[in-house]
Length: 391
Image (cartoon, rainbow, N blue to C red; front, side, top):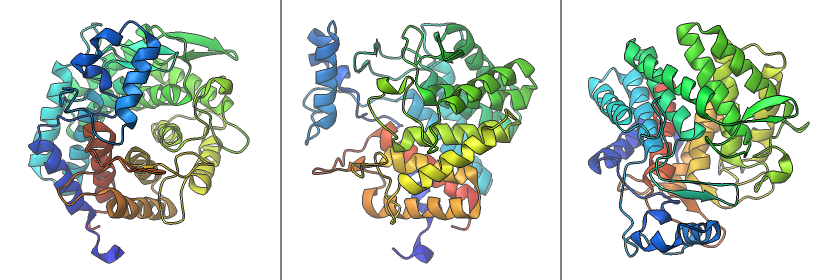
């Protein structure tokens, strides 16, 4: 691909239009339990897990045959909102802001009904190995942070205090409803409200949101909690600069993988840029970024699955990589982001306007997933075009 011929903004707009034309509804890799034929499996963790991964890993898309509906995914809606806000910042075109605000209005209306405070979950039930099972729309830290971050960005761009109020409420939900576990002297968040599974990127994401909101409303209490979470994340970092998925590391079902590492790094960068100043945070970020850049990408920009495993090359990993490097913003990071964008368009993009999920070890998955690939790649493309509007 000739870099001079690559129009990132045009691809971003086409991908956003593809999602808009479908009213932001689609399938997800993990939506197998949305099939009515799975109703007999819901009482057993093992059958739930087997069913979900059978649908997820099938070489053919089983969802039409299993009557799995195309739905809106709250996290996907937040990512599309962020992408449109990036395009609005780059162009001043009000149509992007209109779309973003429609998406935010949807998120405000379709918060989880399980709690009074703003919070969100996936639109499907899912089983995380033997760790926990979440019903559809049961709120988690991850989905809540991405939704709330979209409201924070809207507030920063427009000054709309209603958006900041939503984000403040999401912070309160995490602080009062998400379970905490004491580990190595830290009060760490678990994945959701009732489990005991401590995931590193979950705590980094919470710190990101708390710091971003504190930067807007001046809350010393929120920033202090962000500081404590970042200190925990620092403590979990290995000498190499890498993080395992969970803590203790023996509980990690994956090693040093691509997009979860990106979550941690982007979160640390947002924390630092929001005024976070815990001792060692900048050095931790730099060590992590060096490991990420050196060990989790191929020379042509393809995102490796884990540091010692190349394939599958996944759209989610590619998109998070672009966002991570764009957020860093330095010339070498912008160059890396550009390489990943080029690889993604060359290998994952369909001319109809959507992105495939992955290039696998043996088989590819070219199903158009609305959250996992489309929303993430829209955000990556829009963030790149915003950084370099003439790209």
